[in-house]
Length: 478
Ligand SMILES: [Zn+2]
Image 1 (spheres, rainbow, N blue to C red):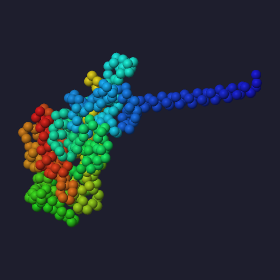
Image 2: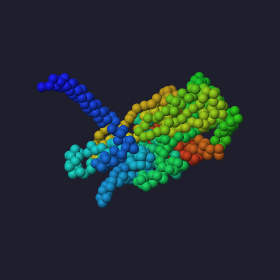
Image 3: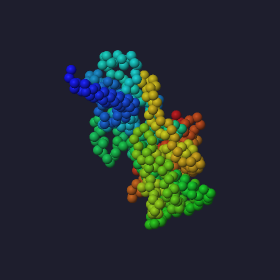
Image 4: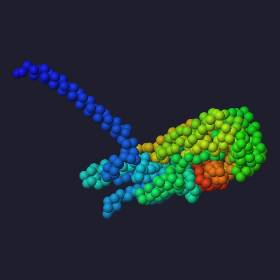
């Protein structure tokens, strides 16, 4: 026995134990990582539209179906018996194009955000076990959306050939019943048309205008200007008087009413129901721009609206040293302000719901291939947009718009409608986008809220309000 063996062995032992600890620690870290990954990260990893791993999943699973709220199939997959290639079918072609989306070319809509669920199967365990041996594909889970086929169809027809968007939601829950964006496309042919559509910036066909289109809100913005005026004049806002001659000039800037119409003597309610630009430009110059900005920020400007699908932020800015010209334009919804139809729907829903907008969502639940419930993806909640007092005041003003003002197209005995029109000029020639935002109720039915934007159509009163009526009729008269 050689004497140096002892220390060496001792040293080896020590080395071994250090290595063991290191290996054990690394192994533990790996396990922790895997658990964390499986529990929290894998979904977003697999749902990432750029992740190629999805191809591997789709080799084992036939992509699941997407349904409307009544079980109507909006998207499903079939296997070609000859080539064994999988085809994605959209039975309603263009009707649900943006909201349902597609699972190829970077993905879009519900197809994109529920990619993980559509490629995972909770089908019958026996079937799955059998498939594990035969190599047959499992059928992926289905996604039930909140979309109502009657409302969606009515919104699609109401928008006609105009570019623009319509959003319809259930006020008490935030469930999206209808979401249309035009121009649209047929998702059945998206692989063939994608590159042409993606490069056409002028039409921006692939943009979901309902959540990502940003427009000058026009006179729909007067809801917020009115609130700020009432806040600053709590005791005497009802004494407000203005005589409209159709034009108002300050700081070298002239504001005119639609078609230069002179509305004559008006109080605040008249100014609102007539959508009188000159009256609002005049009272706007008295307002505290900082306070108005705060009202806008609370009403979801300059912040991300929570939603299942991608959204753009609406935009509002008005510096304390803004010129009269800029203030006059801003308070009537022109200027730099930009709003998305989804955000405007939430503001109007908040008016109907004591100031609290519902958190909107379109993806309701996961079901297996036999329709059995797997899990809920509904994200109900509320967003505080204004006080209950403010909402109650605006509700009365929005009712007057329908009974006596620019929203008379919606005046019916069948249900009670509330609203505000908007006519947002977008060029020097005075061409304008038509807006309508509002809500309605009928005993025994849920209240629904709507935003309509029709690009270049003309006045909100003549185009967007009748479109909203078509949608309300489809819901309340069916
Ligand atoms: Zn006027």
